[in-house]
Length: 392
Image (cartoon, rainbow, N blue to C red; front, top):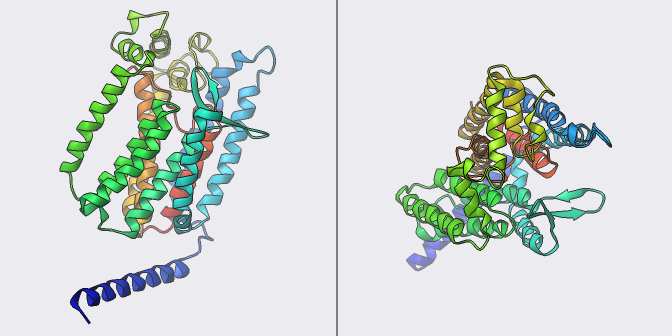
């Protein structure tokens, strides 16, 4: 047998043995029946954050519907939280390795849905990000794309552990991220940034080469800057100007960030009390993207610090789960979940405090919304399931 043919034969045999070994480990893996190994710290943090979200969404939004149904936001957010908790429990009891088989279909399906948004999507507040589904209401495909990119990259790198050692595999993974980000970009810049953050974060963690990310990061920053400066949508340039000087347009593009800063400043140490916010009547999206401003105003520095502390604990526990995962797939999925939740929390708080230009990023577990909350709870369920297989 020629040397090359013999090498290919042994390579196929080793791959077949590895697949058989993986199947055997999957079949012999402990069925998550008892809950003793679940990361209860993360579960408790999620429950507290969701509870804060229900209370603050009601506090920030009831004045908008007081003439018709003052409990509208409370009822919707509480319903979404209850459904999300059911999704979390289901995923926490479904062995995460079963998600491997859905990685590719989820990636294709999510990108198809995202591509349909500019065609059949609904426009809300100047942004076209939602598809209206009868009975279920508005659905945001870009949220599902976050799940898809996490699963797809984790699965590919798990199947071929050496793919990021060469340029071909590296560019293939980057291409998958770029394809999803560009499609999401058609509906809005904010979620495209999150997709890129998740995808490139996973690749960075899994890649042995750092210099590639210096080149890629530089080109990425220049591309985003060029998009903002030369975009035909002039409001992006105006948002950037408002970030540098909110008072340059106090009644225009800088109005929202100014009202947010007023809310934060008036909160003091202990806040004005739940339901006592004065700025929520002037602050657009007070129950959604800018809910952290209302938290600062009503709960003060202490309440805002507690929320930041809880997100810090969740990120810490997520990193711990990722480092103790029994395989590469579980480790990278956990890493992607931490990047998504932590990244969105940091970006949202940075926008609200005018530390970065305004983008439409929600605060995980707390902002009003259905798709965002359900997707986040879905991923937290996966993270909790991974924690049950953690190595000691």
